Image 1 (tube, each protein chain N blue to C red):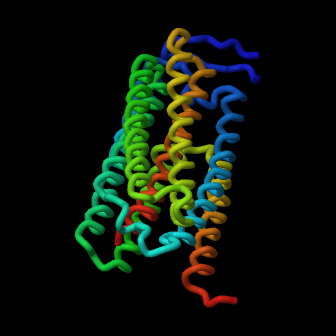
Image 2 (cartoon, each protein chain N blue to C red; image 1 turned 90 degrees about the vertical axis):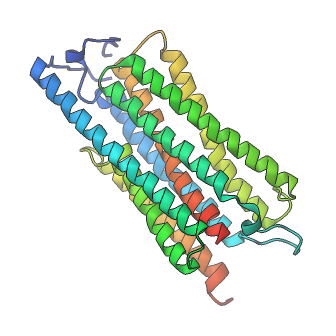
Image 3 (cartoon, helix red, strand yellow; image 1 turned 120 degrees about the vertical axis):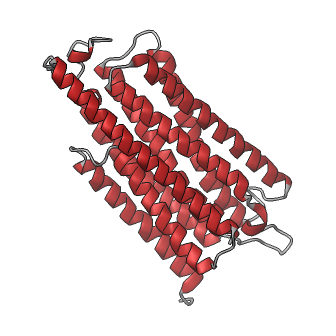
Length: 113
Length: 208
């Protein structure tokens, strides 16, 4: 394990850091509010029996927005040093979307081979 | 090996305690790799569910639209979404070197997660009574494997976070324990990410 080098912070540095973190927390709370709002909207649209094709597109869009908020704000992906994290998630997402599109196409859309 | 100092004064607490050591950095990259793999695991289960949705052997079997209750799914979603926020609070206090508040928010996360799990067990119990079981149809198998794998992750997360709370209760906060808490929080957020797709694809698109 590497030696831990911690430079002692001054009073001002510490205060600035705390302020920065509080600011970030406010952003995270905004993100949470947005997620709650999107969830309400998604459930509301289904409960009010909107047009199914419209619902399908919109709730999937809402899901992706929620997940991006979750990754960027809650899991701190917007911070520096997350290049590998992004790489792994993008590769994972690529396979995830491929699997789902392939299965839906083979079973529900395409004609039998 | 770096000396693990517990409960250091605020001015000596690093800006990013969770990645202040090499072990912390390794955990961080390693865990994101794992989450990439988990994404693919859940994708295969989602694809299976989408392919087998409403595939039942006879017309007397219940379909997705007959089974799912939006109210229950909504309450479960709110519980898990809120628990995700409380684990954000825990990490916030961890970074601010505030051990007792971190423990408190981790405990709240566990309680909300346990509530979610209780509702999921109740839901499964209801479905089994209605004749929708793991063996009753291909739809049933795909449904229980997908939701069950997610539920299993919730159980693991609850055991993990409870373990951290208990293990760290007497020793406090150090760069070593900070990395552990951060990893558990990432896992918990990922559980919520998967649930966002479950409530959208399985429940919302299931009842329209």
